[in-house]
Image 1 (tube, one colour):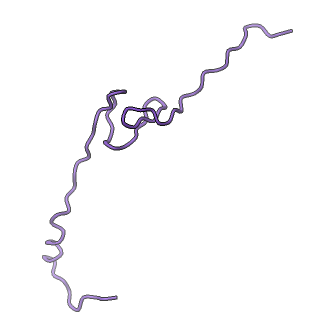
Image 2: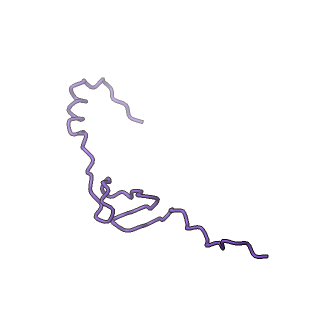
Length: 73
């Protein structure tokens, strides 16, 4: 594996890293729910996973089955 014969200067490394910049994340507002979320990411709202305004996964608790008020005898 090749290795440098001499040490690189600090300035040389700094020149190489000049284009590394931190960028702010882009946030959007979902038209369906009105919630803000990161772009191109799915997001949870009230037990439902939304992506591009569509429900992808629904984990809301199911409604309990209807029961009669008096037991059968």
